[in-house]
Image (cartoon, rainbow, N blue to C red; front, side, top):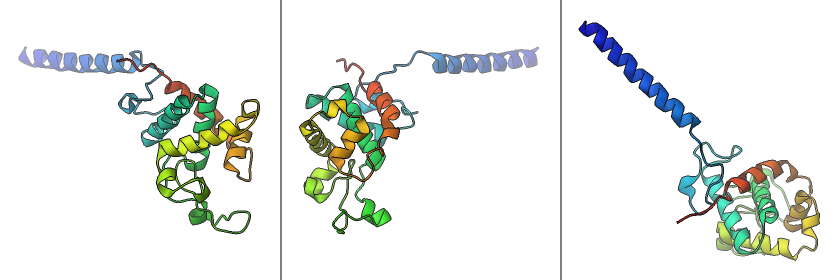
Length: 187
């Protein structure tokens, strides 16, 4: 009788564990997160972007919002950083990885989220995600009619790279990330 009771108890414990696991998997999860609270970001990521990448995207979203850019502008900013650095704040660029040069033959000096060259600002400015995003959005804001351009073309005009379609493949991901990071930031 004790053996049956022990087996029954073990089965009950396993069953409760399974039910708790299922409830955690099926419990409603927010689909929007506060960009100011990285601890709320889903560990599984958004559209394949996670951790440091989402934190950098959140900085871009916040910076764009603070500078008066709406959802479309924020998507353009996140697309640019996805295409330039995979949303990683890297201290090297195209010259170091591929030997890419500027049109005048000089070495590129690209660094940071947006792979900005030295004419964008100091190393400290280009390596600070909020400052780099501010520099990007400032140039985007000066681009007449950017809102009517395909986003990849607008980014190309700001970043001045060779392929104006380069960023197009990031539009869906950037949209998902911006929308996910646009949740209410309650007290």
